[in-house]
Image (tube, rainbow, N blue to C red; front, top):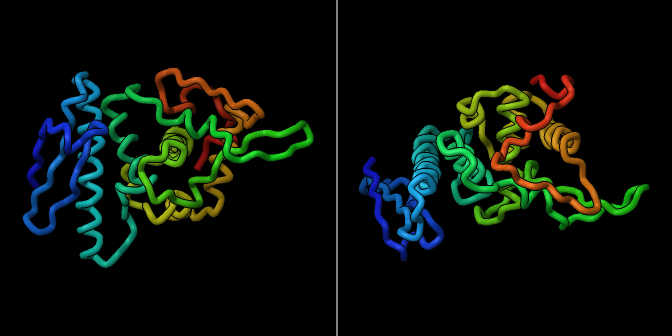
Length: 219
């Protein structure tokens, strides 16, 4: 697999772009735009784009094996979340990927103490687009929860993917309550409220910032 690095502003106006695994001529191209002037940010973008390219390659292999387990779509919210997670392993603290979801106000719920803004469940469903920060932010935080709180290796998480993060969780654990467990863990650290005001401090892993009860720390 050949990877080309270019600085064509027209190819990657948003910072980075890839064309997936080339099944015909077996080459693939990654572009990092010339608008990115910070070399660390450029490397972060490059890692995320290569991760998405490798998703495309893995899907090609999985298709040949006639199985969908381990399938990742770089064009939806799950694939976007994974590419950001992998990029952050090498270059953490580049971009706020979680505030949009933690502070989302699109769902209002009446409670005994008044109206609160519940967070959208992008674990039981997958957004078909990779450009919505609320959906991929939820997925990114779910990956951190699986690794940090549930102690799953990212390699195992990648290998057990399915159409939703909830199905991925079921593949890993046999459990049907992935969203509920994740939701409850987040809510302990940052409860839903009428005025959500999470402030990003340079890390997308909130589970390293505050301690959860021991009951939440097992698989």
